[in-house]
Length: 240
Image (cartoon, rainbow, N blue to C red; front, side, top):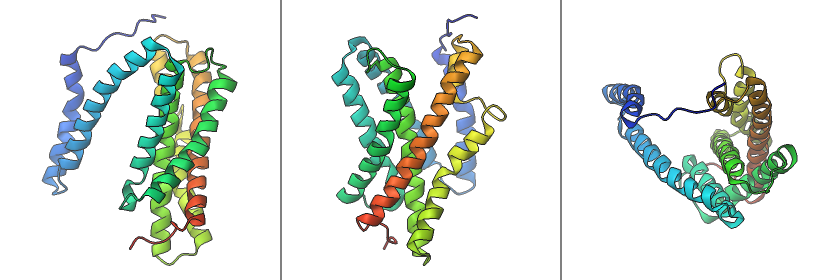
């Protein structure tokens, strides 16, 4: 197989924004407002362009302290964004989200990179940074879904134990759906990228199995940790 991944010319990359523009028009015509979608798309574009340069620097430097710095920044950003549905981001809420993502995500990432892949060096940025991004972003979404559902259930008068169970169930819906659909409905991102770059499908499958296990565990553990910590430190209550 050809291992050279072709470069996408910038002119042709613009074609990818055509369906986005169509969706923005639909949002505007349905009186939903296109601003949030436009803002998110613009922010995505800027962030990816910036991170492309940052990762080039990190990969070329190949220094452990830079990799650890990137991981800490990822985790902090994930905790901040996870709290978006809860209203004001208090220091305690941010601390709980950071603790949940760190305690659930870091050990899972370590098992994948040091146990399964046995990276040498242990901080190899070409593996560590992308896998950390997958782990922390998945944990972020799970914590966000769990926190929002827990507050909604408590606001509806549901007991704490039932609210926690329903919140964890809601947080795991995307991951369970993905596990059920993988190979039948979709080829996940990492596997697709490897195949496009010329990796043999059976090799790509092994990497994807590792990733799927890692993400499912990170999502569930981080969501469960947040729900437990929120109840322990008095954040498991309805929004005012």
